[in-house]
Image (cartoon, rainbow over all chains, first blue to last red; front, side, top):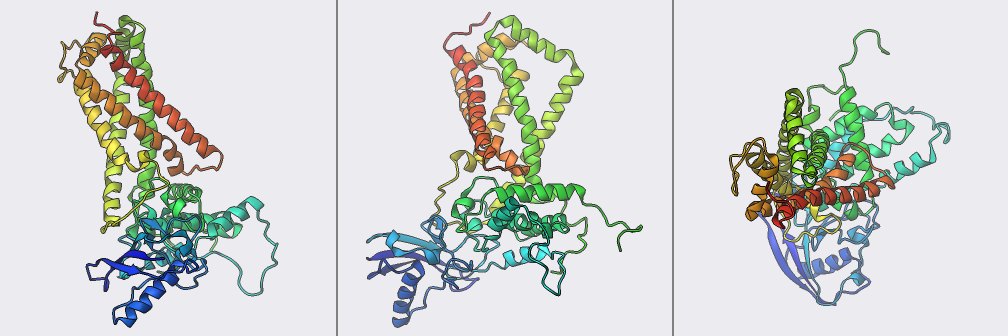
Length: 257
Length: 229
């Protein structure tokens, strides 16, 4: 099949950037979306042009590296699918596709479709540590975890940090990502000692990075390739509100050392 | 970026974060919703008799402490609601400086994406509504008598452009409440796979009933069902 692509081309972070049009004939329906871009890039290199930069790594839908907007939908808008797992059989001959990078002040473009998501790393880092004994491995079932909590924690932990939630959100909010990270540990006994501190620190860091608020509209949930639910945002809101109202200076008298 | 062992308390206070501002919006939203319900129930007495609604208006004014307590609470709620929404709106503008060439919103409701439109329209309505029926300074269509609420309403709504504005504003209120009523639960930390969809349905029904109830008054006047006495 033959496709027409309109691709955001931007030389570097300082460049203004603009959309470029590419004709891509000979696209095989068995290709993944990224393989189709690989083919286009090979052709661009043969012509002596600069290939299109895009993020990718595992190409198995589990690393969270890839991602771009296809016709205004994060990862192309197919349920539970990262762009590397998106196959060309979903498109038809003559389709016109607009490819754009994730758009957020907190995700500056590095080049073309590749964005810098270090803001996510800083939010994770702000979350800090959990108190677990190091040394010999503890017995697997030493700490009982309710089945429901284990399920909810694992569902939240499925977040791969790709940034599709931010890209799909009209507010460029990172609430789903932060919610997933806060919920994940909030449901586990290992996450309890630092639970309040973690919620406060991650939400504050999220705001410092320039992500806006959640307005509960649900575009993120639909775009998430790991199908994280809006429920995680409510959980992180609850944790944040509780923590904010119980936060107090450390006591200097007595205490536990 | 050390692990945050001791968070300085003065770092970002509750209302300085986006979640804190949303919580302010949710709590003030609950208060304003309570007012909207009470206001509607009071107004619907116009269908009973002119004496009934005029007496109701007198009763409200008879205890100034309660009246002014309610007015001040509402004024503070409105101010906080607007302040938080404006601050968040600015945050949103700053969060995406370069817009998408193409952006498709597939799973969100129209109401949820237009809160920043329905809100200011409802605010403009509230300001006019106060000038219209509380202060009586912009009351085209007939004389304004502070002690005859019934006639004020009838004369006020017989002037059709005013009625039309009221009806449009109530449709905007309907949209605003449809998203706001369930959204505040999510903001304050309640979300449930079974109960949240019910909250959404309930919000829809409540929003439509409130708008329909309010709209019924100008429509009844325009249709000649309610006449001046």
